[in-house]
Amino acid sequence: MNPLLLFEKWFSEEKKLNNLNLPAACCLSTTGLDGYPNARFVSLKEIADDSFVITGPLNSRKGREIENSPKAALTFWWTASERQVRIQGDVSKIPKPNAKIYFDQRNRDSKIVSTVFEQGKEIQSIAHLQKHFEELKEELDSKEISRPENWGGIYIKPIRIEFMEFKKSRLHERKLYERVNNEWEMIILQP
Image (cartoon, rainbow, N blue to C red):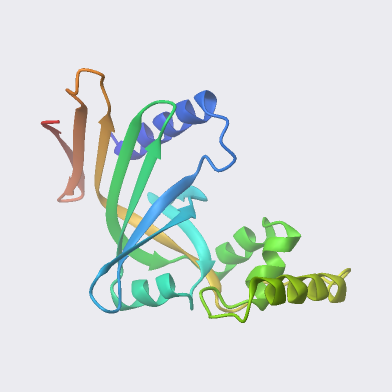
């Protein structure tokens, strides 16, 4: 079985059970520039070209880390279904036309933030940031907001996907799919 189809099935089931505002939230882990693991929550956009798609500024810390070491992990924890999915894979950039499509789907405030602010850069204060944002909203009121050059996305093409269903008995069901010679192989793991 293709584990991407199983992922989509589980994801769909979780969305039906859970009314979260961010059902696609997942933890993206990279190797930091200092060699330490680094993790943050992001939003899965979709599965395309047998890969998980994440978008955002490519000049951010995560973007620089991925540029330095193009491997990443995603972790999903779904509370309603009590399931966890862990993904490890190789990273590549999505094409610019695709990045434009994803950018155009964002709401106006998100576009302004992505265009004007530098994710992760030190600021004077939250109040200063909010004031600057409101000024920009007014200034850009009726103007079209184009995708900034540094905003794009990544494909995470999985080499490993582990599915775990939690059980009250603590005998959690774990299945690990691994890509071997371009084919998916599955093994069952102890809890």
